[in-house]
Amino acid sequence: MTNALSLETLGTHAGKAAIPGYRRSDLQAGILHFGVGNFHRAHQAVYLNALFDMGRDHDFAILGAGVLPSDAAMRDKLAGQDFLTTVVEQEATHSEATITGAMIGMIAAPDFDGITKALADPAIRIVSMTITEGGYFIDPATGKFDPNHPAILADAANPESPKTVFGLIIAGLKARRAAGTAPFTVMCCDNIPHNGAVTRATVTGLAALSDSDFARWIGDNVAFPNAMVDRITPATGKREIDMTRDIYGIDDAWPVFCEGFKQWVLEDNFPLGRPALEQVGVTFVDDVSPYELMKLRILNGGHAAIAYPGELLDIHFVHEAMEHPLIAAFLDRLEKEEIIPVVPPVPDTNLDDYYALIASRFANPKIGDTIARLAQDGSNRQPKFVLPATTARLEKGLDVTGLALVSALWCRYFEGTSDSGRKISFNDEAADRLHHAALASREDPAIFLAERDIFGSVADDAAFVACFTQALLSLRKEGTAATLQRYIAGELHI
Image (cartoon, rainbow, N blue to C red; front, side, top):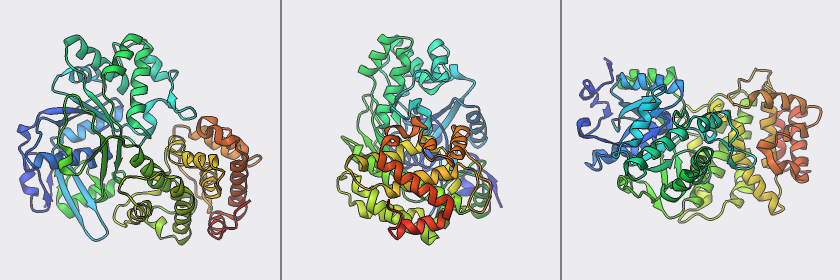
């Protein structure tokens, strides 16, 4: 028998899932979170749920917020089940479900005024976000705030009626300052190098377009701690909804499936206080940089490395890619010979052991993560996850054969068909121009590298261009499998 998820039916699920050990009526919102997607509900919300179960910090519950039309749809689904979420942790040897209750409400577009009012509430002491790597209005080529984006220009022209996350944050801070309320902390939870600093740059950059004095006030008075977050969390589809119903008897409109592993490393800079997240496994440090660089290059870079050969070889799931001997061997050599050597030391961490953990996580057969998900949004992910390692090696005069092959695989992917002729569906804001550039690069491989907002100065390096060209020509002439074999055998060098 199945029951629709709600506070009323919560007790009926106790036999098959862990349920909150606290009363929802005891919770008060202390965190407003933008971007109530799967990762947030499998990560920050899970940590807070565990903390609340300990009887701690019930005044730091989550109030969700969203600025996109899709956020309103998510709000309606979650509201229909009293903002409860079923989180299913999937490991190779076991699975377990937890119903979390850390979120107590959500405000979504078009109620932008409601979001601003909530931001002005003194009870809100932290504003957090997971809005994807591409949501920060940063020019990939320069790594700096882009003041000319249409959404930014619209908010700058109408600062009293903002429509972006950052315009709303600014409006909320203005309202707090006018009321004599101390500013909240802004906590980014996206996979971006120096994500707190990036968020500060976007908030102050947008504020400066309409009020330079207030922009300086934000820079002087608002905390933006950097963070490293990690948990593999695939998209939810019919498979996950059906499994939640059939295995656990829970009719959840949008459950979240994830791996058992999770990690959160956070700089401790919260002037208005914070929940005691160290009690549930969060690591607080003075500088998160070594941890985030390790994760971005080894894990996220590794994801990019297997995504495109996986697509070109018609592989659906990530664990299936890790079962493919050529893809697994390609990743192993790339990580050990090119990526790990340019990852700086991390406190109390062996990088080889960390990579071994990453490889085992990729190979988890129960996660159901897809190659298509890893391949999406490459125009934002390549400059953050792959090209920094390439640049670091080029600056040292080191070989970049494998990393150039990753870029060549990405170009070959954007031609739009797999090696078997299957049509590839793109999910990237720059898909049209990248598709045209990839097709044009059949005449001249350098045309793809001319996408300067992505490749930047890497495209000017003769060694990289030569490696990229050789790899791309091999992919087209010999195919993906043969090219991977050549790299693994050390035969792809110039």
